Amino acid sequence: MKDFFKKYPPDSFTVIQKGTIDSVSRFAICDYVTSNRQYQVCINLRKENDHFLIQKIKFEEKKK
Image (tube, rainbow, N blue to C red; front, side, top):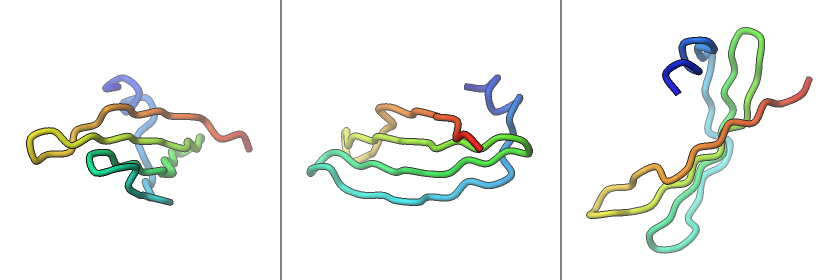
């Protein structure tokens, strides 16, 4: 991921939707915009020991 962020630094990052799946799971759908690309980012979080940890993060390039 470090290489991805270095190659495509963000111009903006916006949370479009967020919500609760169940008592220990959350999600967020976001827009990640760079100077020449735009991605939809899906983030799944799960609660462990009173903290939410990222379980999955997925970047999908949006077609123009």
